[in-house]
Length: 338
Image 1 (cartoon, rainbow, N blue to C red):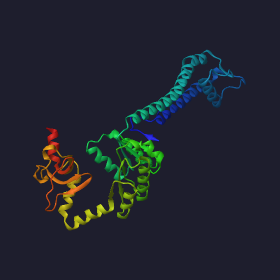
Image 2: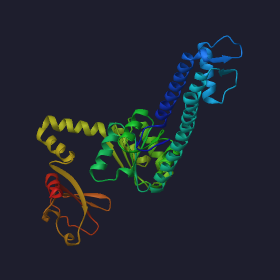
Image 3: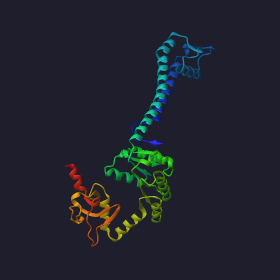
Image 4: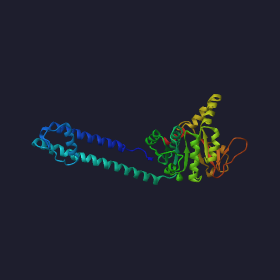
């Protein structure tokens, strides 16, 4: 099941409101008939009980009546003309309107899903919308990625509602199943981020994605244990992040060299201080030493491999290199504001 971002109240709420209005209309009609029951005549000529009033109200509102209970006095007939007949019309409008509302909602939802599928291309699939999944989405949005290009795959109802509330399209189901990933159009996506809480599930999802896409889609996965990282890479993951090992290293840095953790947090916190960025090498930079550039370049990425700039060996920039540098976030924000 596909959950698109919420834009209006659900059809169940609209249906409940209409049912409540119909019940209120019936009760009001019963009260009117019961107060004027002396002006009605039934086939038994023994007067109207409260049950008879309910019966007459329901029959009169839903049909034209069966004739077993009829208004006998002018006052009762006047009440039927002025109140019961308009109430019957209103009751039918509520019933028909409810049916049309449900059908319209179903058609509108189907139309939205079809339109969403036609526009879906080069998107990112997030498998799991827990703490890691939400952080991954936030990181994508902070880099300017279009929210409509993010699809969440989750089987927990609470997480699905949260994703829809945050304006994300969500697929309900287990990401280890091929049918669920096909619903997210995994064959035409840009990347798959696996952020589940189980290493076993991460491995299964990686294998399923690789099988469906023939290895043409980039897979980024997070695992808890270091020993499972190699298994994930063998399964087809291009990048594996070990959450427990990373947290442990940060804890060690905090103990032995507290200022280093402040630098790391500064680099990872968006919108303030320093931030890591990447760009293509410009034509005028080819052949130069990265340390000669105004920006603080910390690494080069050449044909998918990271070249460290440390050591005595001189490294020059080549055509097609990607430069990893440290950007001043405060200056960037100020530049945008100006």
